[in-house]
Amino acid sequence: GENVEQHPSTLSVQEGDSAVIKCTYSDSASNYFPWYKQELGKGPQLIIDIRSNVGEKKDQRIAVTLNKTAKHFSLHITETQPEDSAVYFCAASRGSYIPTFGRGTSLIVHP
Amino acid sequence: DAGVIQSPRHEVTEMGQEVTLRCKPISGHDYLFWYRQTMMRGLELLIYFNNNVPIDDSGMPEDRFSAKMPNASFSTLKIQPSEPRDSAVYFCASSFNRVNSEAFFGQGTRLTVV
Image (cartoon, rainbow over all chains, first blue to last red; front, side, top):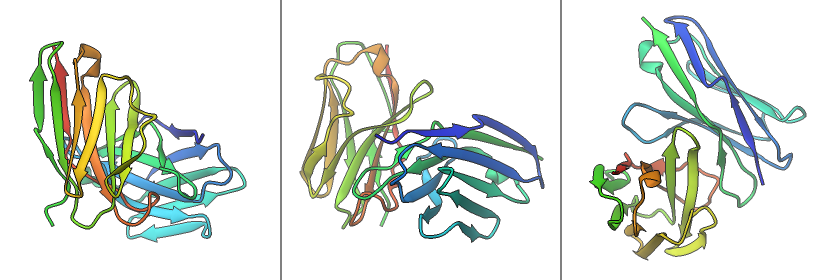
């Protein structure tokens, strides 16, 4: 089955800095890569996703890049704000398979 | 729609007791998922349903765990008997049309077994 590795487990940045979270996956047939944000006391919420037919996708301050050859994808958050503090999960899946989640990255943005 | 609704939000129970967690998915969604979240293991998929039918329960840890979906608007996850190692946050999620589309998560049930 799919195996997703996520790094780092904790990331601490100053407000205004950029944050990058990286994930690798094992199944070369995976073609769907969502990112979820989990705020304290809440369930994860989708913030952006990318499918394998594109290499990059942006939505305001967040962007995701995909390198299918190397089997890794990354989440980039620019101009971080305190409200970006949360746990972020990457996931990967193919076809009719349920996405496999990474272990999560706790992002702390210091004011 | 109010989103995925789970109850209770918190549950504290004694070891050996039966625990039932409840979930109401978003109306019209045909997939329902139960996840468990712990520090040690992250987010684990326990079981998922499609059109009320269990499709894959390979993530259910033991026979003590069971899940049902009697209709499109309600699902339960039952643990009997409960053990301290079952302490975790349990999430229900639902999605529309296919498994690899956006999953909408409930707020979770924090279960503590003492």
